[in-house]
Image (cartoon, rainbow, N blue to C red):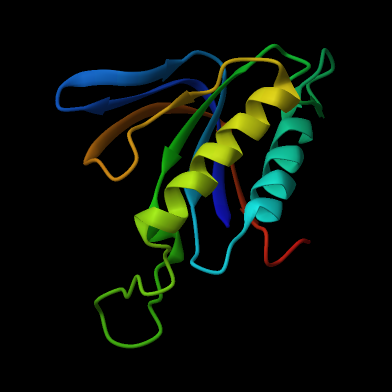
Length: 150
């Protein structure tokens, strides 16, 4: 499971001209699920994201988590995070999980984040054509992969 995390001042996701999720200060999480992923991958990622100290404290140091600032979280599914660009110029998405595998893991990840933070987690619409609008704060953008726990 892969996540691209962006610290944002605000973010929203729109589907068919209707806002499906919107947040203020917090984290935008683009989540990609691979066919070999399982629930443990989502638990690891959610735990890491909920505790990651990437918000500034009173001295301007990145020392606070999204929980500590009372920040919001918006999760958007993005199968393209598992693109392979090894051959040719057209990405292959063969490693991305099919919806019957990915949807329960996506939902489980969101529920775990909700339980860990004690806050509602906003979301996009799985598999939809979405427009994501954000103001990256910093910019701060991080990449996490449950298969490469660094």
